[in-house]
Image (cartoon, rainbow, N blue to C red; front, side, top):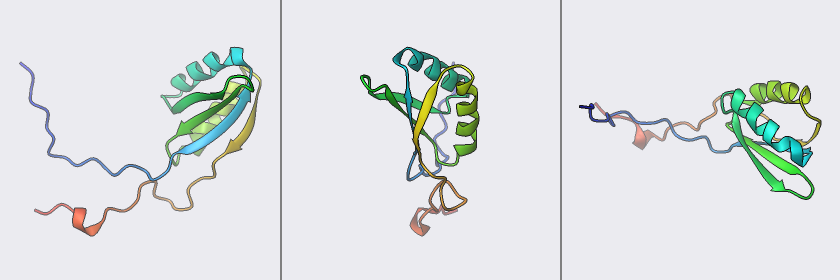
Length: 107
């Protein structure tokens, strides 16, 4: 018999924006880029935007720019690609917005 799911905790609020990194790579290398992304602990999601121009985007959580840089270094050893754009790191240290006062837990 399984225990009922405890829903008494409140999840933290979702980040306001995801980071994005646009790449141009050969169509034959898209699968390798996806597999390498999975090897990095599912750092983000790779989606092909234009299959004719071979443009893809990696959508990742804010604050993961350092991990993304390591991923791109590892990927460069496997396939050739060009970084078209990388979203800048968040201006503030926190990756999630502060909770509004009315959402605070009460005892």
